[in-house]
Image (cartoon, rainbow, N blue to C red; front, top):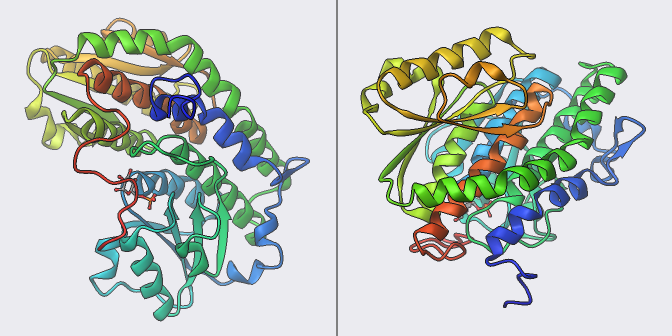
Length: 372
Ligand code: G6P
């Protein structure tokens, strides 16, 4: 097993180190001169014609990737998107039919809840597309089309490199649909493609520069009993993912919130010393959104919270109020979640390690849940 870990202390640490590669491999062969060309979707344009909505179904981490994907599909392809947990979707009476594209996301392709939801969607006449990391798995076989993520085999129970690859695949899909539907110019698509191609190097930079500090931070926080995560826009699902990872592998109570929702309830949780991670959106993309998150930081700081900000390099506005600032490279707004999640994966891993837990095999969890 030591050899399989390639010198890393755990599969999870190896897999986080492979996040750049997971994205690069997922993009490879699907980009041509700034255009998105997904060979698996060749000749399947009719799959996207006349659809009036997209429903993304998944469980766990994959569902958070879906929530990130919603922003891109709506912004680029101009189709309304709902993201649903597979087990909730199936047991009500959802309004779906031939004009619905159901996109399932699953690393394993074997999650029973997701599989049953895909079958249910087909029975209702919906079109189905699977985003999956495992060649020939059951879910892609039960779907009309598949776009594989090429993250490579993932062994650690908590999903990391598959998560970033799922977002990359969703973005490719969104740009593909945008072209088919004519909602984006070739030039606008090329710009986003260029941004995507820069992601692997940017993640590598985070891994190289922030890993030691994050491990140290986790070490000092080993006795922490609860951690909150705040984000806005695409930072919101990343806050949820950061909290899930901490629960899964460190057994620490963790909650993610939309930063704007804080004042409607969760702010009551803030007491002196409460650690709060805040994902700060780029001030270049939206000065308004950025200033709103900075004032959220000020509000929780005034109540004694210990703020760990994840902010773009050069963003000085967070310095007076945050206790710690973890830096991510400059990127387009929809690219930021792919970067902001990396420190959170490192932190969860660091905390689990600091507590002496089994990072790869957390209690009570299975890599792939093949029962309903
Ligand atoms: C399990 C794992 C999670 C994973 C979820 C969905 O609950 O513990 O880490 O996110 O299943 O798995 P899938 O293979 O469908 O992506």
